Image 1: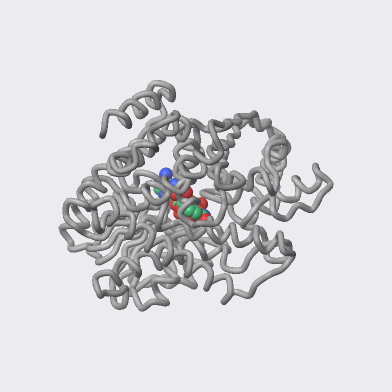
Image 2: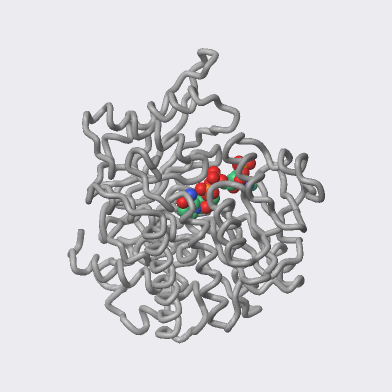
Length: 445
Ligand code: NDP
């Protein structure tokens, strides 16, 4: 790292002690900025780097709620409003027991550059809670969401901050959150949340967008080599929103996804994933991956390790941060994997990324490859503002165009700064310069 960025990184570590994931995300971006700042030194002036790594606002609050047996629970809620240079803060809510300030901060920081890459006028934010929805009844999830929104509603709004889903927050949770927001405000502000149901302001293709976008990005990367996903074997991790729709788009493009996972293990289905069965188990029954195996002859459940030991051509990590480490990367490379596109946020460790880059394979960071979700959320906001609804083909065509533009911006920035084919540098440089130019225009705020 250059001296100027090293100093900023050291300040981030000193000021945000113990927040390892946030340090990791900041380091990855700052490391990419060396060539950008060498070429354009003004980006390091007026405290711009110091300002971009400091959230504009951090909100942390108590979330008390009562379970079905009458016991009181107290969770912690977070909303990090990181950067509003390009538009209202925009980013999902995560409900998972691992959530803490550092995880939300890393996600919010990534979101700034991801949102800038979409070109849609949305700032960066993220939120969530250490609440664990697994095993909770609908009524418990509803009471939790109502308590969470009672505080969050003071801080959000269609032109201020627009949350969406993430791990543990899907259509059910967005519904309860929206219902409580509407009740508290006595106002039908459809644009205050995205990922809504289709009958009350949701956008067609939003559910599919992140997974579809990730696969479209992988397809664009392959196209630069005159290749495509047709006939490729794919390892997918996760079995949630992103994983399911990555599998769906990959199948549409003629590829063969053969794995998926959840926190209980991973499934290998050499015949190719039965998507209808997976949706039934995960989306309808909210079951575990073992429930798929028990109904699918030939599929096997592996409860140790991660799917990266299975020989494949393409890997799509779609579960969570740091789920693909140096050993997993070595195993993928040994087996001839030539493409990795991140559906999750920061799923590959820095060591894994280094191994992929050293091997010269195609590797896409999540802030570029999984940006289709937030891009389609911004399309949902656009439809809400215009009181209109596009059909699926229109929404999907816009998503496809945005993913192609993001891919091309990354390629172009990587070439501009002297590292053709480096999608990490390309995504960070293209996202950073868009935000930084506007921050400069707005003055020191
Ligand atoms: P879901 O809650 O729908 O699914 C998450 C999946 O990952 C589940 O199968 C879950 O298993 C698994 N998982 C989560 N945490 C862990 C863990 N610590 N160890 C093992 N498995 C785990 O979330 P999404 O699909 O929405 O999100 C997945 C990833 O994609 C996240 O990194 C998210 O930030 C990112 N993302 C999501 C977007 C979206 O639009 N939804 C947009 C951009 C990025 P289990 O149920 O057993 O916990």
